[in-house]
Image (cartoon, rainbow over all chains, first blue to last red; front, side, top):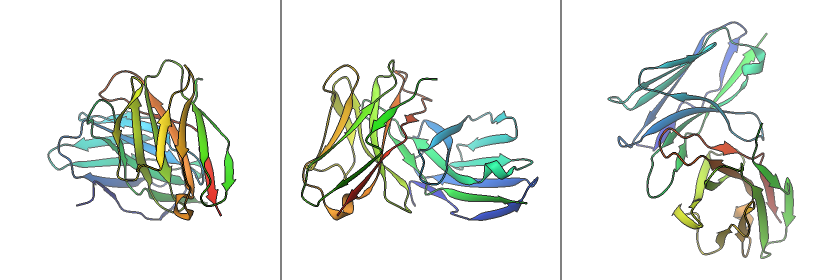
Length: 112
Length: 115
């Protein structure tokens, strides 16, 4: 099993659609979880942290299921500007610092 | 808003040459990292640095690579003898002192092209 696994997509959706991304991780001892967004040839930018209780930020909702080692991201009412690659990121917390492990990313294209 | 800055934005070098990539992390952060992303591939961890020493490194970070914090603000990645396969985007990142639930903030990256 890959350390962090995502469906690479692309997901092509019309503006206004709801889209869901899934991610699984292999290390049950992983401590923290994030969704980052990456635009073409740019740096990853934090979209949101993911908590066991689930969390919402506007149109974005993230869920974590530790038992299944599964993370999800839901985007409602998608906008053209949401087009990007969404990276599932897991922090294993080893040694004296943090090590973020990235999934390959899921590409989203929102179309008119 | 505080940000991580990297220089140069693009570096072209000949195979076998040494390169130094520079980063200025966010000022109150204590953990520093280098990641790389080969074109079309995922972001890969190279090394983390805390309290003036390497805290973890990946298999990619072999003897060709070294990191240094030469002063209170800069954090550098040196590649001693570049290979064609070192061509990638190199991202510097930093995070706050807390260990758990700490996101990392990334610089805009240095695109390294080895010819």
